[in-house]
Length: 149
Image (cartoon, rainbow, N blue to C red):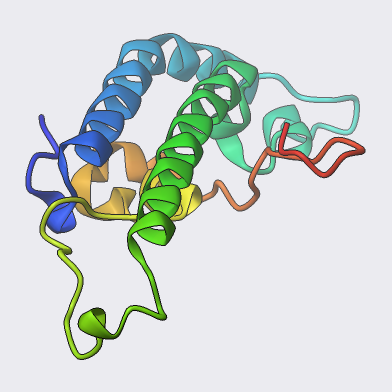
């Protein structure tokens, strides 16, 4: 399955989508097996511990979070490149640019990482999205210097 041509995104973004989904499909059988075994376990009150400790479901598994973070930072890095290119090309004081649209066909973006990786997933991989619809938080933080980590 390839994301080529998806949402008019260029090859850089679709390559990230393809790598993201391929990596997820590779680990999902093991994660599903882990989740299935966890759902069989009950606490002393007879409650299912999977739902108590993992309310987001199997997508909260550390391996899934690591894959998400890896691709989140790839999208973020690409967005920084695209934003820098856009701002370098934009000279608001240059009157020759007035009334002209930029050359938007060359490259798409920037695209918010969570939008690309999770929210748009329902359009490019419905099989994975059945799990990721419960992925309601972004496991990215900021260090003391306000850099993403």
